[in-house]
Image (tube, helix red, strand yellow):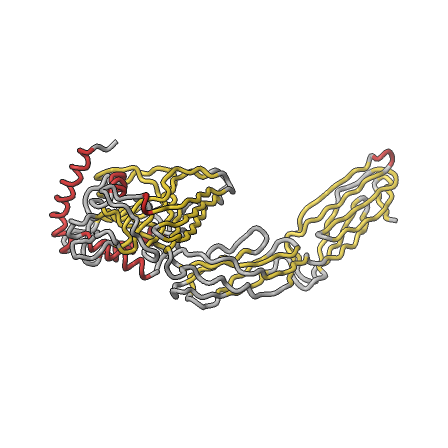
Length: 480
């Protein structure tokens, strides 16, 4: 447990760091970033990245970090959220900086400490963008975070949070739902006189979670700013709609070694982020419009790829990603991003016959998700085959022909022969025809049969069944 002595030490170290950062800002000192892995940097994001900026109003270099993070957030270039932990103005922010065993202000922790960037300087935005793209490419647990907030008025709002576990095993982690002011109305300003942006007020939720495979965690509550305070005698009863963002962040329970001053100083236990979602409360609609129902064919055959297209627009003109659900238990995953209003296209192949509904959902690069589109129905038919059954000595041979117009793959077949005197003949063989081109033929055959008496023969190939009767005469089979 950290004591008040630790807090005093942090203040002393932070002041020392502030003096050190005089040369840091001048560019003679390279920014320190904690590497997380050897994952190549990429813009293919697996999740929304979350950054926590440990800062203080007296810190002369902290405004560089705040301004750079806000510029990145406002650009909508990435699925990205951030909060400012104004250490000297909010006890909840201070407690969070203690979790990180802070070395000095400012320090930005990306995804719970997967990446750490220390210091503030002109041009810090490039280092933060690098950290965002690196953390955004991490392999994360397959969970979905959803957040809905309804402003009730007079500093109160209903906050509904859900986390769905798409993994095959139980997911354990920790959820924090941050309530932040987009522009501080509490008088919290950096040394340039600019109000703090995305400043943490308090949490709506801060607890461990355990979710069974395929299940969801849900929490619904009313959060009233009059009932929360900064720990210094000021409640949040004056907050206004349109100036509040709620951000839900889920941290994996697996621990990692982190360093608040990389590569090896000020160690802390890091828990990395698996997903995040945010809602601007009472502001303009953030999510893209619900996409149009996918356009594409209404009939088709198994094992043939078919293309589907859709489009939508985003109210803020953000780039948009799409996720197609093909109605057979599979999805395209998020594809894109595409410009607002541009057409997105993907293809899919069904491996069995049936009637399927294709639908699509959109989200912008800030992880605001639309509703699902209307369904587009498609009927998928099995390819047609003919089967000619004959006997060759004591073997049943089925000649299979693809009578359709498309190539077929993975065609299951079986041959059963039963009967004979006292029912002694009982032969079964099965297999799969890997591929059969349109108009082409192949053969399947039973094992050798020996016996006497009447036998029943059933040959099944794909959806085609042929029944025959025959007679076994020792090592000879004859069909009737």
